[in-house]
Length: 382
Image (cartoon, rainbow, N blue to C red):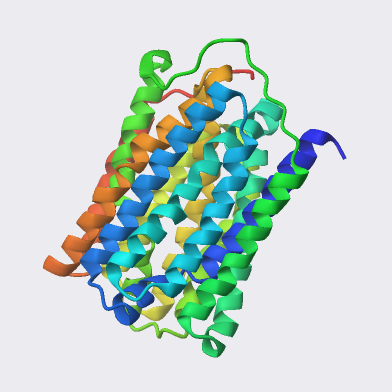
């Protein structure tokens, strides 16, 4: 097998294993926090948003450092190890404040993303790049699908704390695979990297701004799960509903990646915005369980169209020798918005009603969609 393809394949296995563990306990997380630990929805929004903020900071730091020291693999395997250890912390937590260090460690594991995405962008030609990111996304979503399916069948046989311990095992396996089997080769033209918008084009600045606006309405998935439960979906069926989201996100990631390689990144991202607006509209206007199930399916299509292509277009906006720094910096800037996004969602949920966060999300996504018309795609050949 070609060494570059092998590297993408090994990254895909690591992503598959980690997402299996993450989503094995994903749907029980908001119930665990609010029912077992006894915290409020506002605390849930705070801790999820805080975790997303740390995820963003860790990606920026790892991107900058990996470009600076010319080593990236260490951040990838260590990120998976952090995810493993965080689930041990969750398992032994008895009070709400004890969840905070676990969440910080868990989301700091996202340090793996910017260096990994930079490697994938470096070793893949432009005409196949979105497809490569789509394959990587399909692998982690495939792990999520199987993790949710396993949760659906096993949740009734184990206590919540035992489930967190089980979920730690796949991430440890993924960390060891990256550590022992991935060979790294860093190339550079000698330009000293640093995070700065000095190298950013007008289009990248507009794209960053609209991405930040969108992210302000892209609150934690915990609220979709809580809303489904409030609309009548039983605790037993919640994994099935979220599994629907993951299934569509996994199955369509590669097709949307291939589509972006053919017609461009921007039209596919615009379609993703439309799908996200439709998802939020369904949570606002419908009460039927079938419509909520459909909303999760549409949400999955959104994820398939958006998540791989957002990484592709940012990598192509970045100068070749600074990809990890720019990818990490971009993820930091828009990811820091995730803290107020989830916190505001929690406030609106408690102070207004559970549909209010979805209304705000719909409005902000519409603004981001309109701004997308003012962005031209990067034309880099690397």
